[in-house]
Image (cartoon, rainbow, N blue to C red; front, side):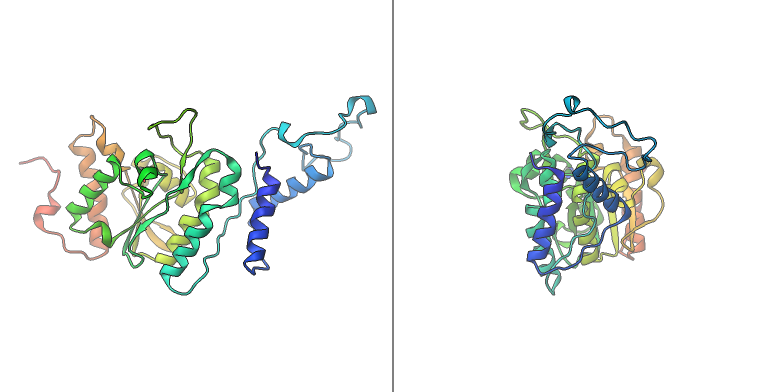
Amino acid sequence: MIRPVDAVIGFLEAEQNRGLTHVLLDEGARDGLRELYRRAQAGGKPTRATASPESSPPPQTAAAVPTMVPAPAMAPQPVAVPTVVTAQGGSKEERLASLRQQAKSWPPAKALSTLRETMVFSTGNPDARIMFVGEAPGYEEEKKCEPFVGPAGQKLDDILRAMGISRAEVYISTVVKFRPATPRQTTNNRKPDPAEIAACLPFVRAEIGIIRPACVIALGATAAESLLGAGDDVTVMRGSWHECEGVPLRVTYHPSYLLRSDADLTIKRMVWEDMLAVMDRLEMPVSEKQRRYFLPKS
Ligand code: URA
């Protein structure tokens, strides 16, 4: 297993090889690095950052000290995850290609060992006005190396059709770029966990910065919480405008929610009202018939 410190060193060396001399660290990343440094000073043992000399445990006797503290035996510690990724190139296409190239072997994601090997990067129009963001690829997406191509993707296609736009016009991304792994995995999928989200989040943020769509649509609670940095139920987050990377963001239910057998007209209408809000904001044409989709027939 790759140790957190090796993941950080790997990341910094890759940045240096690309000619970068500085990386931006937020407070969380700094705390993580300080902890790695303290651990190295303490011979690999986790430390208490705030412990005063008086509160430190008494020195251990020679007999009690193991000859070597093996790093893999330590409890998993939070990893200092780089919060920024730098896209190289001039055009949007070049910068997205640069992100795709870096994501493939992104050390913070690889260091977790909980994500599968195949990367599923985003797809779509770099000049899109609408960018959809889901949580992570599943079985079908991994097989085709494209986001939203399974049953949830077909629902998303239905939504696009109802809006009168094609898949080629929009940009479709996910927060996590690898399918989350499970033991003896076949077709089963799982939600990404917070460490997996933190490791991949710089990419979707960078994508928003490159595409600069008129609007981001977060599909489901995981995508919304990740992009907004705060969590709540979709029921609470939908219905108003938010912002991510300076771009207006709307939250709606994940298309897989519409696949549930108990997904009634009310839920379909709520998703559709979210789409109508986007279409109105973007001054897209909306017919009277479209306005009435999923309303009970009177
Ligand atoms: N769910 C997601 O969030 N993304 C996909 O690509 C597929 C299902």
